[in-house]
Length: 587
Image (cartoon, rainbow, N blue to C red):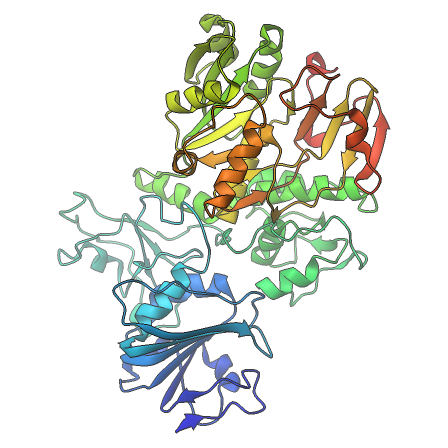
């Protein structure tokens, strides 16, 4: 026998009885189909076994990742389904090799949200499959906890997946010698839905012999973090179809709700009365916000960004404001920032971001000071510089003086060396986990490196970069802004902004030994190998186009001004305000 879903948002889905439906809380009971047994996440502790099918329904990938560690064992079954009621894209899972054979996988839009159904040849633990769905809900890199193990007492886990999140009834349980992976930090808080975490104890935690100290108990972790792997600027639209409106008191921040807001010019919000969690989620997603009042729970950078009152009728000003606000929210209120603060309080090591090696190659000694100034002004990002001089040798003391406190590696190469080989030698000399290729004559805003790092994390892409959206055509004395779409996965990014994982570059053999089109060949090779390329905003980068003869690829100035690709043009040098250009660097 099968449960009928006729007239239900999951119409067409069939599952053998008995069917267990799990909701996050009791409010989800109305969504369960007739004939199914419904329980909450808390109720899974004593629901029993023997289910032929298990369906978990939760809002979106953010709630899936946050609650995955709280689901209890509900026995083995052949059919496991996940219904994300307020998501926009179905999840497609890659089964683990130790699992029984998968006989079918269905992922589709439903009457509401999206549905994923997996059917197995032999029974498998339902919680194992649901946890793996949560783990694979976001693609990409650096999805771990950064070295900080967090446990929870009296509250649900924070945003961001940690499938080993430990839930205790009292803080002292974290020091139990039977716990072989002890928590560095125990976060206490509001009463959780599960009976397993119904009490709170914040004193008298003994030393755990594995870490040789007592886990640090944190009762005031601050504003809950945003799961930046789900809530982020991806899908940003430069155009809008709906005018500015007031933030609704019941505004949701699910994937579907944020997707719907992409058409809105902006939201007016009173920070004194609005829910701070809602506002910070909208900020991280890049929704343009016109704010009044104050919210002390926000970081100082976010508070400062929200004080701005941009003209949202100006599409460029609207995007500049969005970029400023989203960056502040992601730097101060992401899961990475939240864990970093916990690590600092506990005095433990936390790896927040990968090590970056900036690869700068140049044939022109007269461009060195300019290029070094572009790097010296970078904020919120640590990196080493690998300077590969092509046909000349730089003064090491001069370079180090321009970048105080940063590691510098010099790689001089002869003039007859192929450009690809020069870059490859720089890559081989680099020590970073991530490589960033920059050009010696382009302008970079002070947030260029950190914006690429943020995009790398929230997109999960193998390569991130900016478009050559702003171009200064020196021979014509004009700045043109091209209408490149941004915050999307795309095949191409500007060569002077390519940020790629070291292992990804290695997998395609490094930079090819060629004289020209080195960037295009690297991107093509990575794409051919299945790599994903993400294009973030282009406001903090300006491509300089000189007369022919100064570049490894030759194009006419008019090719940047073809009909249909130009958004705006200005006489002279007119970058976005994101560039914060130094007067010494004006053309």
